[in-house]
Figure (tube, rainbow, N blue to C red):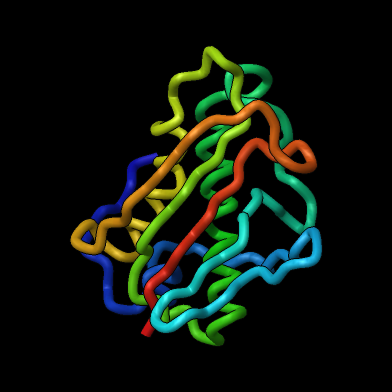
Length: 161
């Protein structure tokens, strides 16, 4: 699927609608923590999983039973969930100025080497919303296993207005 990389408008909520995307219902935490925490001009989000209707959209490990494309879809779903949590916390997604940092943790086999290609599933979405001129830093790595069998977890830090 080609990525629309035209410059983002100042309002990510409007840009989402322009792209024909609707936010899912914000997922709820799986334990004794909150989904988001605002400190100064930063909004920190707890680990975002690829939930659809309160269920994991897929389980497994990249390089085993999941392909790069399936991984890209899982991180995109998790990124949409991050936007939904930001919307719920802020009351207005347009208060999000930019993505500052994205950390992507992948459940992989030892032989899997395409971490960056998978993480681009989330990064491409954020570039579409915030533009290339508002780039984000990123860390991506693979681990043996993740909670409840999820193949991906995103950690997201937004700058807010």
